[in-house]
Image (cartoon, rainbow, N blue to C red; front, side, top):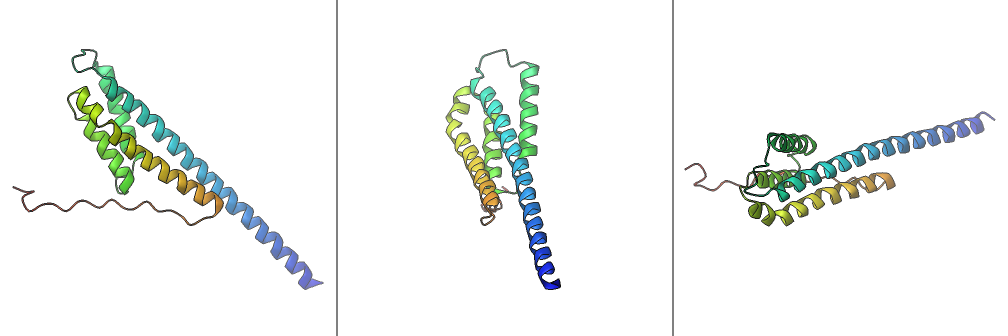
Length: 153
């Protein structure tokens, strides 16, 4: 009778551990989904402002600059620049911010959208893999391009 009770207790303990593991996985997935939504919302507004500004529009008010600064800071904090896809997205968003004309910014629109989709898609697949118990996906680290011999000249 004792070994039967021990087997039942082990089965119950295994079931409890599995339930706890699934609850933890779901909680982590929810946090990651919130991060994805925050990134998407922040990037959408940042993109909208940068792509719609007129070159000769004096309405680039302090409030507009403050909003872009806020959104840029949000992107800095949301994106891990040590990760390949996130660093690429950060770089293109920063490059566009530094451009003088709307035509220059709009010419980079596709580059920004592609980089954003790569980050969002990778992390969506990562969440799905974790939920179904698949192999964990790891975003490759960012590797700085080698500097040319005349880089310091």
